[in-house]
Length: 88
Image 1 (cartoon, rainbow, N blue to C red):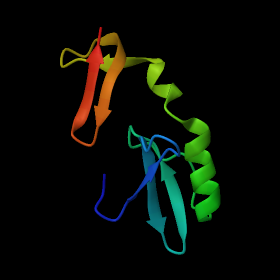
Image 2 (cartoon, rainbow, N blue to C red; image 1 turned 180 degrees about the vertical axis):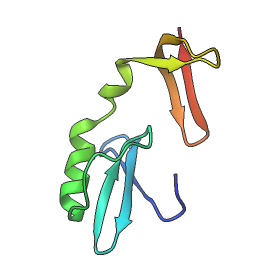
Image 3 (cartoon, rainbow, N blue to C red; image 1 turned 60 degrees about the horizontal axis):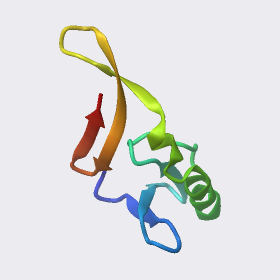
């Protein structure tokens, strides 16, 4: 997370679901994994994108590249600005 990114929290429970990255007079929606989910768009579109994504994508299986160069299938069990915890 960059210092100028603005947290976006889910309505209802206030769970962090991403950030709004300022881009000139627009914003880029960024998910919890730090991936840009939009090109520069207006605030409302960026918000709607993050709200639509929610957190469901974190339940998907991912591949982790090991130092050996091989790949390991993992599931994300926890994500924060400090890092990602995976379960195998």
